[in-house]
Length: 195
Image (cartoon, rainbow, N blue to C red; front, side, top):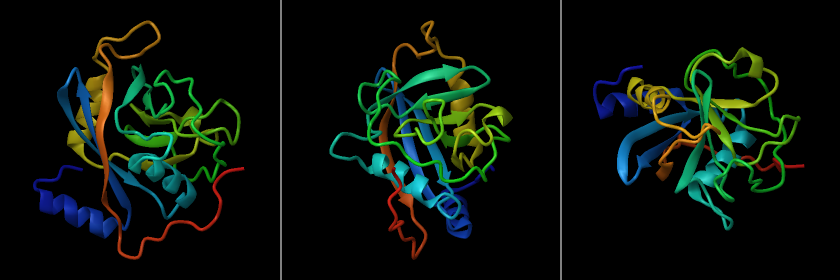
């Protein structure tokens, strides 16, 4: 969607009934822009709660200053390794696969990365750079990028220089991250999300 004004975006947030976060991306101290992410807490409440925990930061870390450690052209961007930023870090106990209702049918779908086995997601996440139907039923998608400007930013990340391991150089980091909208009456899950 293309929002002409901030008021249009605020109205969309309110009408959607969803939680929204923002990530400011930087490379070598230069802003690459702000990503706005819509989270489907009505479909995947525990997964969204887990993600929000890292947006806000925990005793072991959070998404702030976390690098985007992988960019697969035409596939996805991946981040969320709050342990060492390499893509090999496991932040906490594993998260249960909550549901597979959200499909990987377009660019801008956000989901939890895992170790290739069920129920092995932790803090790492990805954002699709196109339809990824082969992930349906294998990875829990729980949100999307709703605006044209944010989609333009993630498309641009595909053009960045990368090492052979698909890590951008120099590093691209989530310099700032915040919850920008929670619907009235939003209540976090009382159930344990982990095994």
